[in-house]
Image (tube, rainbow over all chains, first blue to last red):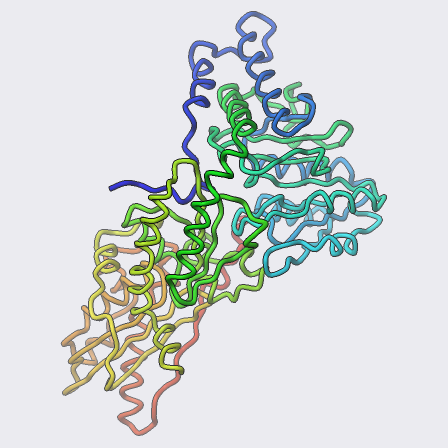
Length: 393
Length: 148
């Protein structure tokens, strides 16, 4: 049976170009990039090249790119790094309620050290209201971190406008955006976005796991989370993962060249799935913005049934998806993002999260839209909630 | 996906005794959609024996499989025997459940016991018992796990 990956937010298949870029650095060019002798030459050149490739994607200078181990590390470096560096100026941080856990849990950890945070609400489509940012700003606000696009509902925030508010307020607060989901699929031009820091995750866009990207605008002060040597301009010590970084650079170059092509390819597939599912199944709802949305994300809630069961049946048909239901989360809580956009906790149990990628075809989309309705029907026939609703109890 | 046993997968994909009994002698309903599981068990009783049993379940793979298994275990059994079947015995009959599923999705025996209680209550002229809304894993929230 064919395996259809509709869960690209979990993993994308590495591109052959990425693998080729990585290969020399496992065995042949195993040197340490910091070595002055000849063994360090090729690894150092690989890091330099990757930095230029990432800088080109972000439209920044190459010395504003820092390599980390993951998107989560980049988010932690932004939040904690800026908080520790600026604690003399203030202790207040603003985030949205729909951030990834690597942002939300980082600010929660900081509260144990005396920092405070405001988690802004979002509207039913998942948008942060820029006026709410303005109203939440305080004299002691040192950092604002708002996700570029939601990893669950795909809603793209107006980061440019929010950045202007943050910088215009005059508290000297930094603006960070978590672009771990958006990067590689929509523009992440840091000058256009107006941000001081940005996180990105190459494994989400056909790069390798084990490398994260962090943009740090020149003059922005952060304290390193890993102290040690001079690697990454002293902002992130530790011997560089040269192979992963070389792969990350190659993935950035591909993303830069293919951004429009990717969008054009994915949009019709996304549209087919959304339109067909909404028209062929009763009481199914699309979460997130219909228009201002990542081209590779779809999030439905299907009433009266539970996500893990849907996921297991789809898996049985060779289709890999994710869900925001309590049962599928390892912490047994339904998605905080769905809760934040006002989806009732019971309804959130029927959540289905699809993330598309370049290996998906229109044929896959058609196969999925054929497979889903009988699964939903089968589970609804088994559901006491459906029975109650139908009998009008 | 949780690592489910072959038996769990079999009962999930081919659930036994799904449906409702329109003239049921007892109905037990347990759970809460917020938690992700609701189980409803119908029994038909004759001569103190469970002559027929059916279920409807909203929930994950483990919830469906435990519901299916409990109906299989008690069909034809006396009420006394059925009352002795525990959630743990149901899980054991399925060759175990992933630890995370042991609490929230392993309530099928409880639902069955409620159906028996309902039958006895009606028989004693006290009417039907109410459905039970439970959410016993609520305490396992993020805050405790994230900095464990």
